[in-house]
Image (cartoon, rainbow, N blue to C red; front, side, top):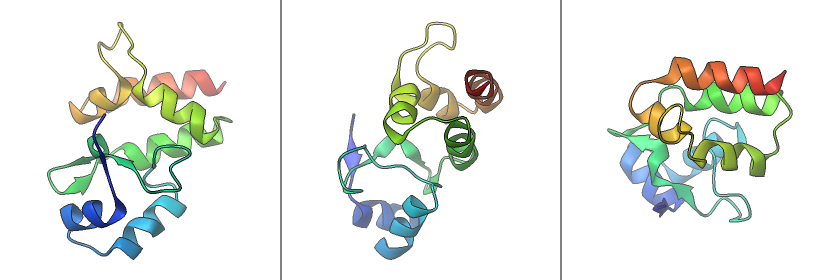
Length: 107
């Protein structure tokens, strides 16, 4: 998995590193757990923006009781029924199925 620093993400988004750190604090973006917010998966940014449905999906996962580590693992775990990973499905604009699965896991 390719990762980016907050400064690199800021450059891609056309904003400041401080704004990226705020997105991380607000759980609208997620860093690799244990990286001290220093490594953000490149897959979370597409066409100069944070993946459209990522913030909402992160909210569903956290509200469902997922820790950062569990949410991160779930987002990048291969799922043959999708196919691929939930993050890849988000990148392919298949967010409805991913969100539905996250909601079901939270029950």
